Amino acid sequence: MYPSSIDTSERSVGEDGLPNFPMRRCPFAPPAEYAEIRKKPGLSKVRMPDGAWAWIVTRHNEVKQVLGDNRFSTVPSTPNYPMIAPARASLLRNEHPATLIRMDPPEHTKHRRMFSREFMVKTVEAMKPYLNDLVDRLLDEMEAKGGSCDFAEVFALALPTTVISNMLGVPYEDQEYFHERALQKLDLKADPEVPLRAGREMREYLDGLITRKLEAAEPADDLITRMLHNYMLPGHITRAEALATAELLLMGGHETTANMIALGCLSLLLHPDQKDALVADPSLVVGAVEEMLRFHTIVHYNGPRVALEDVEVGGTLIRKGDGVLALISAANRDPAAFDDPDRFDIRRKALHHVAFSFGSHQCLGQALARAELQIVFSKLFQRFPNLKLAVPVEELEFRYDAFVYGIEKLPVTW
Image (tube, rainbow, N blue to C red):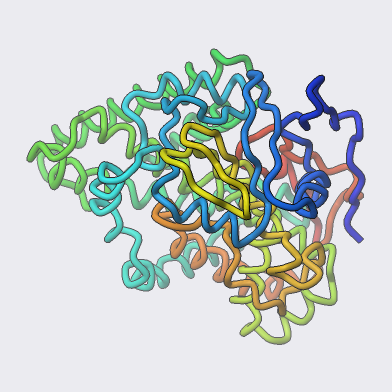
């Protein structure tokens, strides 16, 4: 069984009676308050750390409605944009220029179109021989560790970091540098200066990389080089915008998938019957990956928006200028959308989950993430049928205070 306890000291209500946001999630579930709020008619309000209030949206259909409606802005400079932590506010308010995911149409449409081809299903299909070979090599390296390792570092982080480094043309040997800064940018409990400094250092690093690519005698065959020659040099985007895009893709391409691989492995270790079923029937891997994505929903604070005009959602009138939190982690545990949603079940038909968000801002790299996860879990337990946790599950440390949820270490033996 999963541990399901929650530190009740994290639950608090402001003087005005509004629940304080964010609430602390359980190791394997969103905050219990989401389910309580979902049962109430209409929408509810929560109090943000800066004292502002926002509507909280927890039901599957209504989360999709908000995320799919361009009358809700995702631009952080919009008045009343819900800031989930001072560190997050510091980062978003000083991020110039904004990244793709923090733009509204038509700017968002223009920038997304430039890079969507790089992540199309057809493109990812062509990458699968490389992905298969890479997974096999990393499993070889894991086996060479001699019977135990930290799976989170040795495999879960190494795979997507290698993939995105190769795609972007970023030296893999620099991975420790950019991974550390990614963690600092995502730490919600950090001093507000920490994510700002990490962002500056990340873009300084990428600026030097761009200079080297522009000075190369022959253009390399990588995404950053194509972006420079197809969009920056012709004047379609500025150098600063190229830097912002490179940073977004580098962070998004390794941090999320790394945590999903580690948590997916843990899910199967804690459900050996389902692990054995997957080994016996590899065709279950597609559904297993979708269930991992739904169950963990690691980008668990995704969905801050501001209404650009009056919109009715769930029988509640959201006024122009109101802040809104459309929480995908709550939507993916809605019993109206998923039977027994707190149960992990690799045979579940979960493709309608919103772990990659929904609407025009859904994850650009979702086809690549799915391919990596499917290949990993079609091979991992076939190669290591005796893989097990090296410590009690209660001793594992989870990243509660990060924008991307995950696990610090996953010690395993075989």
